[in-house]
Length: 113
Image (tube, rainbow, N blue to C red; front, side, top):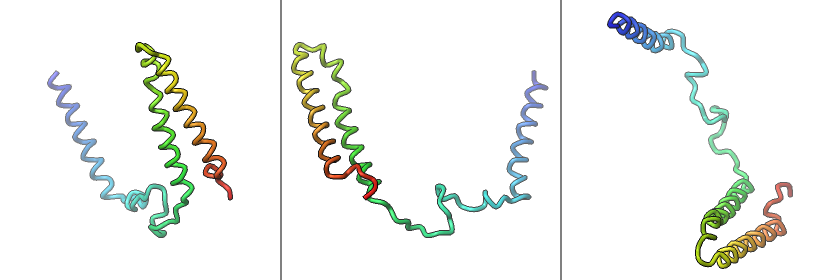
């Protein structure tokens, strides 16, 4: 048991030392260069940002938060007045639908102009 543990420890230490030693001998161009999240690291750091992405993200957050209000609805129907819960759920869905129709009619969801 001690022999097996010592051999495993020696092999693990040898592999760890080799993994630190080999990159110092053979540098790789890709590993030496900084990674800029998929963008060209030699180009400009200030790329133009489309406001459409921002507006769609804000709309997604608003509609996602409003949908999160509906998540406890199945458990709330077990209360004393499930009719009130269902009424409020349909009110929220109606307001969501009105907001969606308004954004669609105003062109907030159109990508091409």
